[in-house]
Length: 184
Image (tube, rainbow, N blue to C red):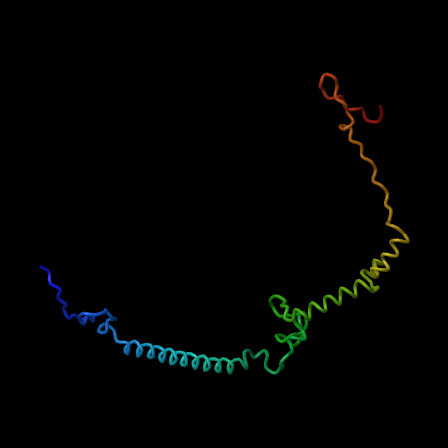
């Protein structure tokens, strides 16, 4: 016959009654201390990394004051007022072109200047080729002249006759003989 015996074990079975959580396997105090330890370590490591970054940044800024002896004594040029590097710029104060691509450093200003040049070209008179006598007219004036004078007329090209296109095949399916040059 089987007997119900309750053995005292390490899993929290204290005998008759409802089963509760295990009290001997893990310590909640230990988990709490471990979590607090991880947070402290995280804060310390983050502080050390941030301090190192600040120190290296200060060193880099101090070293940037004199990158090249070429720029010494030239002062600082306002690059924002010179949107394209086709003018004297911060790299070369004497007006010579630096090696490398032309860089667009102030796109909104360049776009405004470009639109102003296009508007001026479309609304004013000017020379396109003075030696060739070619002028630029405002668009409205060009439209008026076109309506007054009409489109320029050119001579029609001479009609080219293709003898093969006019030839009619013979009844037997052979091609007709080419006409003799100079007449019928």
